[in-house]
Image (cartoon, rainbow, N blue to C red; front, side, top):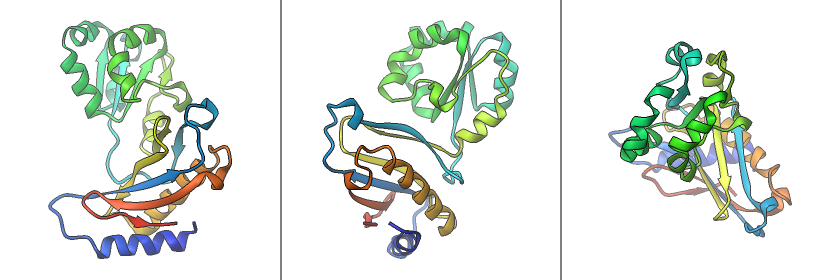
Amino acid sequence: MNKKEVLDALKNLKKDSKERKFKQSIDLIVNFKDLDLKKPDHQVEFFANMHHDRGKKVKVCAFAAAELADEAKKNCDTVILQDDFNAYKKEPKKAKKLANEHDFFIAQANIMPQVAGTFGRVLGVRGKMPNPKAGMIVPPKATLAPIVKRLQNTLKISAKKDPIVQVRIGIEEQADDIIADNVMTVYDQIIHHLPRERHNIKNAYLKLTMGKPIKLM
């Protein structure tokens, strides 16, 4: 895959798209081959970093105690204080709503046991538990602005049960060069997380929310 192929695919994707009343997302779909996902070293799970955002604000929620509360309120979309955890234990629907409305969750390190106990079941099945590999578990006096900013350009890539990854890479209103850069950046990172790199790629597509997939390779 090269940038010209991506730009050509984007051109065709947008040309064939009907006008909608909402901003359509553009997804990158990558299908894998010759992976045995029962083997841990064949499973794909990592956080990809891009040069550009995805065109839509990424929503970040923080789980915080008193030490981090003010910093979290300045920088995150939602803050759940430790004192309020019991309310979410009593109302599972409230926890599910929180999980569905946010892309990433940051947690104060010294209250992670309580976070796991209260929200682990809901966030775990969605792959949204605060993850130290992406810098989402922080000390009580952390500076959150750079973390939240970086998360705007971060994607979680996961293929542990099915040999496919589908992630939102941008929106149709973004410049083609920006979307193409995101595609190439994420695709290259996916390759390097496969046991046989390019030999484990079956094919790749771009797709608008309401459109047909356009093959990249």
